[in-house]
Image (cartoon, rainbow, N blue to C red):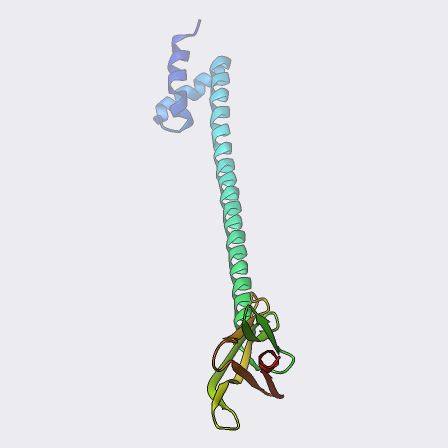
Length: 207
């Protein structure tokens, strides 16, 4: 059976451990512990509990620091990846603008002219290579016969430039005229850097 003195000592042991008792009480508890193995065991039990708490708190703080550092590292990696993707996109977009923005003079290798007849119409067709966007100025004028009469139309293209185009397949444009027109004759002239291309629908008119 626990002695009354042991009961008192055990009640104040937590305060004794925290040095929160008077000097006289501390002397009393110390002297009691020297002669009481049960209360000494209780003190040791309390001390072990305090020690565990003291040891666990820094460990928790250390673990929290590791987790925080890891989260910062992940966030930094994500930011670096986003920046890298943005830079790659910016470089590719700039390269595309440069590639498509520069104009080049059109040569015989870039375009072709042809004619065809279909359903009572004749067509003059201009075709460009795939990936080329064509820019030009044009003018139209009457074609006169030997009697100075208007017998057709001449379309002249000049200042031809092309731009590269990633998304453009082979392009074409055409000029059509019905064979029943009073002036079915048509001619297209293309003035290029390395010469002139010229074609008419005459072969279909005078068959």
